[in-house]
Image (cartoon, rainbow, N blue to C red; front, side, top):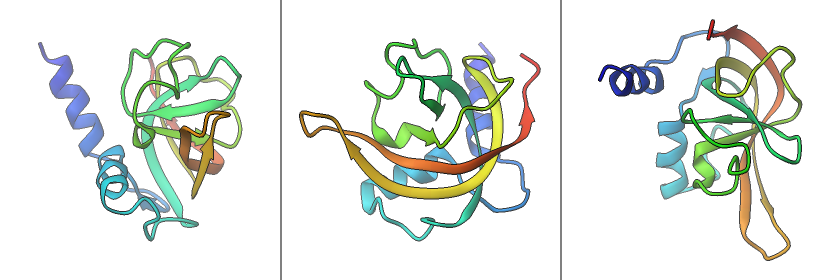
Length: 131
């Protein structure tokens, strides 16, 4: 009963730290308006759920409980932030706070479908959850 409330608070109350605070809610709003917003190229701070795709790419997602086969494939592009490198010591679906350089760069699959839009270059761990 309390998990949805905790999850919502998790998404809307970022920790203030070095870099501009970015949330998945902000990404969604900008994706709808203009995906190439002013955050491109800036150092940011963001909190999300760590996953690795079946192809081995590291991803920060907006929600927990995603199956490994679906990471980065079924949800809209604004719900994922692809990381430049894997984060050592993270487990699937673990809550993590990262800093890094935010990059907007569209990537399409062989069929021309948009599969990645937002990326975090040089991701650094701020905190890991104790899950």
